[in-house]
View 1 (cartoon, one colour):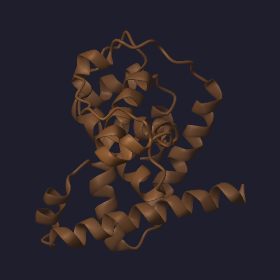
View 2 (tube, one colour):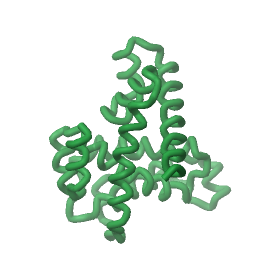
View 3 (cartoon, one colour):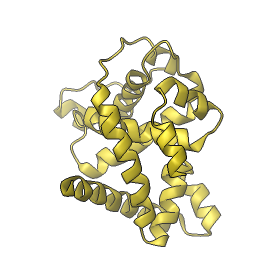
Length: 199
């Protein structure tokens, strides 16, 4: 798996999207890892709580990956993804919070085709090197989790199963699944921060 991952990290976004369209799960992981930090940074303009940021980021990836067939390769994948993330952040913010922050109070419901009509953003090659390292750390850290957390983390973050599917698959109450996923994400974030500090 690690060997495959190393090769996949050298692919362009378009090549990864092509693999993702064939339901190659590793391609989804690389795209997630390549843009996870960027998506969180992008939505931090609208979302302040770290826990909410993590939830909105994951929801953004789930939306993007579920609609990846509609991505137009004429535009940068990052730009398309960031627009989805922004809209997801807006949906997350309550109407009251939007008014306080002077953000639009109307519901954001742009179609994926409209998302494609935005200009390409600048791309920094240094980010790719950092993200390749993050990808390896991310996979390694999932493996370090306690079994209860590791299983749900893999099912949710790698296989993109929803809470209900995981609950049915593991024969667990849905609230237990939600709690374990939330804790697994918190542990992974902490592990990523600690491993960053040690380097």
